[in-house]
Length: 110
Image 1 (cartoon, helix red, strand yellow):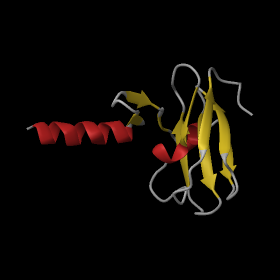
Image 2 (spheres, rainbow, N blue to C red; image 1 turned 180 degrees about the horizontal axis):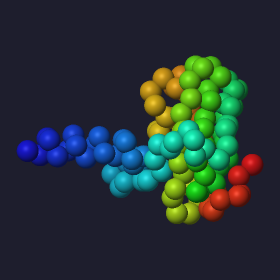
Image 3 (cartoon, rainbow, N blue to C red; image 1 turned 180 degrees about the vertical axis):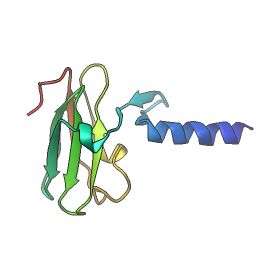
Image 4 (cartoon, rainbow, N blue to C red; image 1 turned 90 degrees about the vertical axis):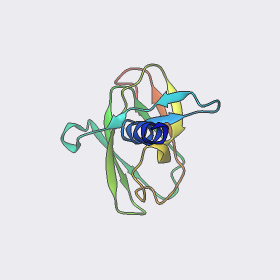
């Protein structure tokens, strides 16, 4: 029974943008978004190290290296930074580590 619950919770966490930080505490990074509701598109070039977004934005990320894309809704309180690989579908970022800086409130992104 415990295995079933843990597997289910892990699946829910991945689908909903929840990861764990050191100490096992959950961290919410938003959730997958709908391409039709994307506020903007960010093209990720091979030499990119970071991107800026704002909480409340829905962003379509296009990875030049893989030719793939995904949409993410950044709906979280406060400002934060995390590795975009944590929420990108497998293979989209070609396992490239890219820091996403999330500013509080819409309209603060570059």
